[in-house]
Image (cartoon, rainbow, N blue to C red; front, side, top):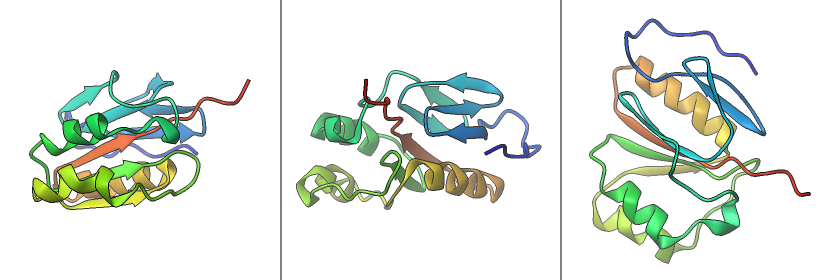
Length: 127
């Protein structure tokens, strides 16, 4: 799906996404990533939802943000409560959704001037 850019200066905005890529500001990315309006981390995350670990979530909890959006891949899956504990203990609000919905929600929140953190899992196609 192609998205229309929002004129918010230097904010990182998702400009397109599909099951195998996310474009941020027109730059195509093909692996899981962290996205904030002023930061992009291409090294975060597992290559599949099944690889999501406590270490990934601890990393998310360290950020100061309005809300953490966890995109769980092609479909919405809810992590075990113990996996989400670092976010709860850090007092971070979070939403769990499929990655496409997380991309859309992220853009809306940035457009409202909020500070979301999107943790977006891109799953590799099975070989």
